[in-house]
Length: 319
Ligand SMILES: [Zn+2]
Image (cartoon, rainbow, N blue to C red; front, side, top):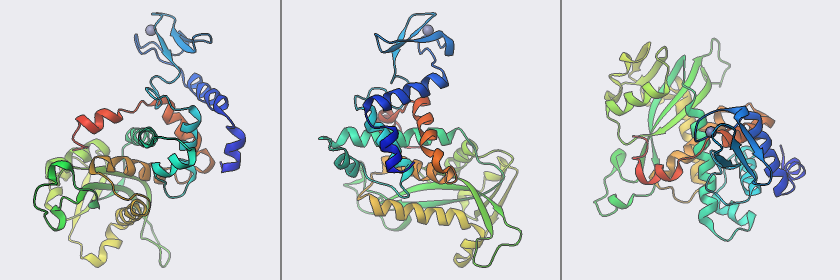
């Protein structure tokens, strides 16, 4: 959907609200009190709410969706979803705020990150399988408040770097064309991790990778326990110049993600990096969806509620 189609399909607040409700009705509304499904919830036009036939508890059109607790117009959300799916790279919340002509930055920034949060939730429903490349990467981020007074470490342990585990489903190609990669990529995952300890890596692999998978990594000590949890694990001693042969896709993905983040965002706090990576992976994993991308994100937006705040203030980011 290009910007002209968007303007035709969603010219005002009512058209966006109507589409959002249609999508909710189509997917079926679950009562949040007694958990009963679909036909039990019906729409009360005068109250603008769904009511459960069994327990009479009501819920608004927004509750249980990405928009719960938000007062922003539906149209803002639709514009944000359109930009998130239609743009090739990315855009900043400040840019969106300017385009919408909204006074305050915070609500717009929260809206975009809630959408990135449900993108991550959607991708978390799937695990990777088959041949998988795995490596860790270091993304430049701002120094967190707790670390600010401590002396700055250098290199990989620096407080200016956030560790990310990158996993890519990638199959070997039989006769690769000259100049092309020796492997073909399907899906990608990037997860912010608190450290490179073997336990942390293993926990993430168990969560995001099927036990039948065949993993390829370098020979780092962080990966020594992985073979217990997957079908096979090849830990190669990889000279730097051969990285593009053995782990071609994780490295391409890492450099593309870094380039995109650098180009758009001035500074990223480590606790928010996961949201940006969610967006990058979500779009990469749906790169062949074309026109359907907007509708798919709308489905994710209707079916997932973000836990954006609790993530930021209560959880150690994705350890
Ligand atoms: Zn109920």
